Image (tube, rainbow, N blue to C red; front, side, top):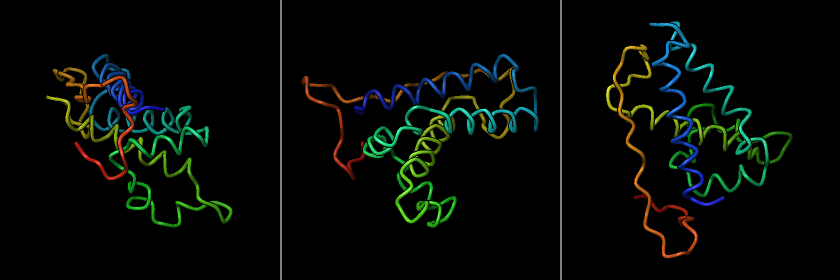
Length: 142
């Protein structure tokens, strides 16, 4: 997985979530917030970036939220059956990135995702490629 592939997928998930909210698929008010949260949880939990260990490990090279799982679910959530739980760590990272992007969508409030909200999705700026992989070194932040 390359940097661009990861962030394009994050943007795709954000666009789909906003579209569904705008079309009223989750209802309004508290029902919309809960519906959006449940959809995100289920969608990310079943995503190929999460369910395949190799992709889960690769995802962690590109996320801005590599510590989301430990920070939000406790360090014990990073282990499963005595081994590193790559899929769980990747789940938290992808969930955190999608939530961060949703929080940056102009006119969209994840705590009140009403259908009538006007939104503009500004895609993440990606570095210009010289033909090389866009994988970023660990610890690098734009």
